[in-house]
Image 1 (cartoon, one colour):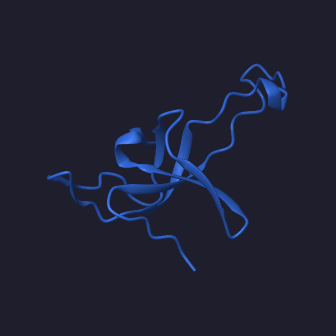
Image 2: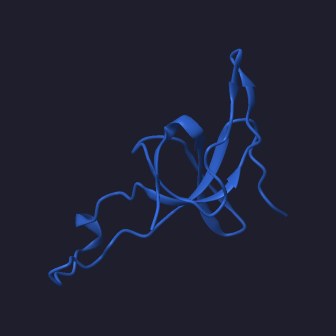
Length: 95
């Protein structure tokens, strides 16, 4: 079974936050920030939404930066995901 989001929706899997700083300090879970970086798992087909043509700019496998409080969390096949609208994604992170 796989996830296929509708219209301008994107399914993401949050990337784990850093647990050690660059200087080597180990951060406890309570001190770590909520991650805003994620990997795109599935992308809707876009389409006409509210009279406007929406073209999808992200693709599966992209690493993205998204709005902190965007989307809805859910579990699927024992994994944790978030689904949000494409306009909640602020940037694609390129290596």
